[in-house]
Amino acid sequence: MLIARSPVRISLAGGGTDLPAYYLRYGGAVINTAINRYFYVVLNVNDSDTLQITSSDYQTFYRHDRDSELMTDGSLSLPRAVLHHFGVTHGLSMFLASEIPPGTGLGSSSAVTVALVKAVSAACGWTMSKQEIAEEACHIELHKLGMPIGKQDQYASAFGGINYIEFQADRVQVTPLSLSHDTWQRLQRSLMLFFTGSSRNSAEILSKQSQSSKQDDAQVIAALHSVKALTAEVKVCLEQGKLDAFGELLDQNWQAKKRFAPGVSNERIDESYAQARACGASGGKITGAGGGGFLMLYCPESHQGRVTEALGALGLQRMDFRFDLNGAQVLMNSGLQLDSPLAHVRHRTRLHRE
Image 1 (cartoon, rainbow, N blue to C red):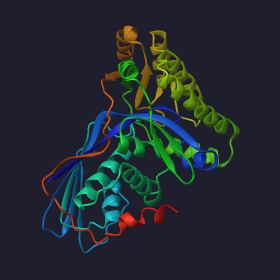
Image 2: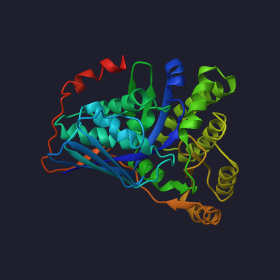
Image 3: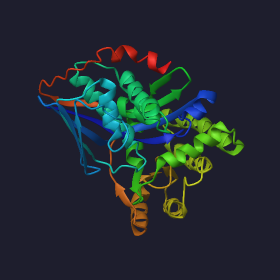
Image 4: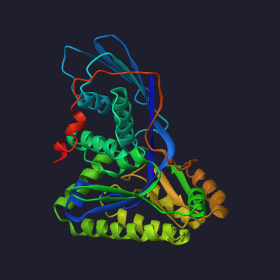
C-alpha cells in the first residue's frame, strides 16, 4: 500500500495572472499559501489485468481492462490521465478522497493531480523534485486534458509554504516569502475562511477571462495589470510585517478581480463581504475563480468573533485551518512497486513542454 497527499491552497494576491492567455504576453505573479486541508491517494498493487479507481468525493467507480485503450475523457478524467501519462494500464487499485468539496476555489482539482503524480511516480520508483511534480501536473491538466486553468495551484500544492510565484513563457520561478516567525504567526491567525455554501464552475469563468485577454479587452487587461502590480506591493508588506496594509491591499485586489469576467461575484458574495468589512475585516476576496466557494478575509483577532457571528447569520460557515509547509508527500509506502513501460517519461518532461 502507498498513501500520498497534497494540500489545497489560498491565493493571497495575483490570481488570474497565472493563466497562459495573460502571462505568455505580460508575465504573471501570484502569492499563495498551502493550507492543512488535503487530497489523499491510496494505491494497492495486485496481479489482475485491470485498473480500478474509486472516488469518495464523486461517489463513483471506474474499471479499465488491460486489453482496451485507457481513455482520458469522461468521469474521473484526472486519475485516468495521470495513469495514461505514466503508462500504467493494469494491476492497480486506487482510492481517492478529499477533505475539501470540489469546486470551492481552493485549487482542489490541481491538488488531485499533484497527489496522483506524487503517488504514481513514487510507486514507479522515481524521485521527482517539487518543481518536476508541478510541471508534470501542469502538463497533464493544461495540455493533456486541455483544461482552461492557470498554473499557480499545481505549484502551491507541490511546494507547500507561502510563496511568490512568477510565470514567464519559458519558466516558473517559486520563491518562498521571507517572513519573520512573528509575521508568519500573526498572518495565520488573522486570515479567515468562510464557505459560501455553493460551488462553482471555474472553467466557465476562466474561459471567459482567457478569451477577453486574447481579444485585448482593455478593461480586463487593465484589471490584470493592476492585480499583478498589487502582488508586488503585497510581497513587500508581508516581508516587512505590515499586515494591516496587506489587508487593505486585499480589498483593492478584490475590486480589480471583479472586473476579470462576469460571474466572479454575485449579490450574496457582495452582501457577505460588505457585512464582514462592516464588522472589522479590512479586506478579502473569493479564493478561486469566483462565483462561490470560500470567502477569505483578513481580520484582526479582536473582530473575528463579530465577523463569524455576522456571516453565520447569512449562512456562511467558518473553516479553521493552518498553513502547510511540506507540500505533496508520500505518507506511507509498504514497498509497493509498479512496472511502467514508460520509463522514459521523466526524460520527456522538457520535450513535451517546448
